[in-house]
Every structure is written in structure tokens, then in C-alpha cells.
Length: 92
Image (cartoon, rainbow, N blue to C red):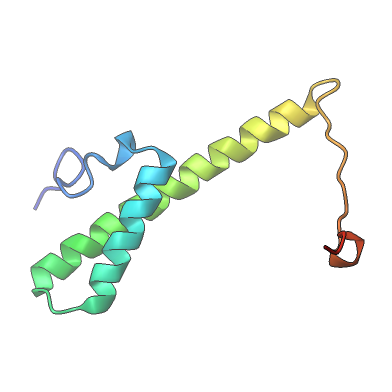
């Protein structure tokens, strides 16, 4: 038995999604899975898509983190951390 050459149709377009789109869709798919009621095949397809969306989000976040680290490593790129606690906030 041979494996398909490309990604499954349910996950083929995931790689083109921006983070916000992928995360929003992941939330929708998870909600649908939690609601239940679908056929076994439908549920498996939704689960496969959820995994692909999660991996896409993780990859995009890792790339963003790397970009921030590279910016911080540049001379003058460091941003001073400011510790703000609730006690320091002005009361109105």
C-alpha cells in the first residue's frame, strides 16, 4: 500500500493561512469537534485539519519569536523591560 504523494485535501491550504486565520479556524474546528455528532470519517477529517492548523500556528509563532530574537540581538535593538505592578497604577 502506498502513501499519497501530497498533503491530504483537508490540510492542503493550511500552509497559505496567516496566523490569525489559522488560529481562528482552529478554534472553529475544535468547537465543532467538542460539539460532536459528526460521522467517524468527518470527525477524523476535522481532527486532521485541527492538527495541521495547530502545527501551522506553532510554526508561525516560532518564526515570529526568531525574528524578535534577531531584532533584539542587533546593536540598539534591546528594549528595556518595564515592571509594572497593580500597586503602581494610578487610581482614578
